[in-house]
Length: 316
Image 1 (cartoon, rainbow, N blue to C red):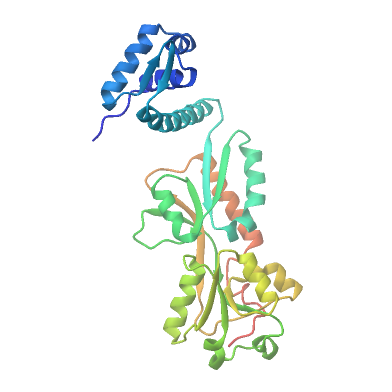
Image 2 (spheres, rainbow, N blue to C red):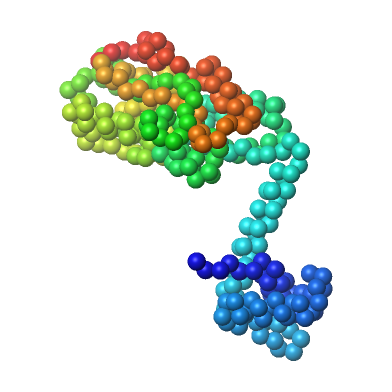
């Protein structure tokens, strides 16, 4: 393993590169000129090449020095950021909470949860990032986020799960589509539709492809999108059929600009919850955030798909 560069030597080098003189660098750092000179000699010996050249009282970077400068400035920025982050944690009552969630869930849950969470923890530095379902568990494993809102993991997963709600995927299309007009899905025409699906890495696309394979259906025409908003606009323009959870198109269903129809007798259900790493207890802030998610989803999103999601949906 390569030895790390000495931070004090890098600090002296950056000052020398910026100011261009040993005297000026020494004055800025509150050191003697000989201390700066010694730091530079030690750094050059460490990296194995000349980093600076003197021309009178001025100092110029060599080609190697220019290359090191790029990396040294980046290291300095990262170290400064780390120090500032640690300093903020030293302020009484101030800490960080990092949460990840798919965009669809975030749009439904995030505003209310964040507002109420900040009332309880006003000094918390809260970061919420949007990630696809497939990336959530990896972010937890790598400790890049503290909590995530996502689908229930496999039974042998080291990721903890606190259930929030269940949903059921359905066909969604324009009110003038033949299925909507008939009030039922024509199974013989399922494989002939133009399907507008969320991107392949999403849980919806994965489940939809698996469902069609098991049913013996094919998807001859599939267009994938990163944006659920784009899918909804194309559906309202009558340009295809999608497979979505009704809560994603709640507004459009209420306005009757889109229609939802059941996939059939075999349901395609998902279970959502708060994900966390099992090897440590949740902090009070994390417990509060998870509790708020549960309260908000109980109000906004269905818990029992058989009683709420399919209420009034035509069957196949």
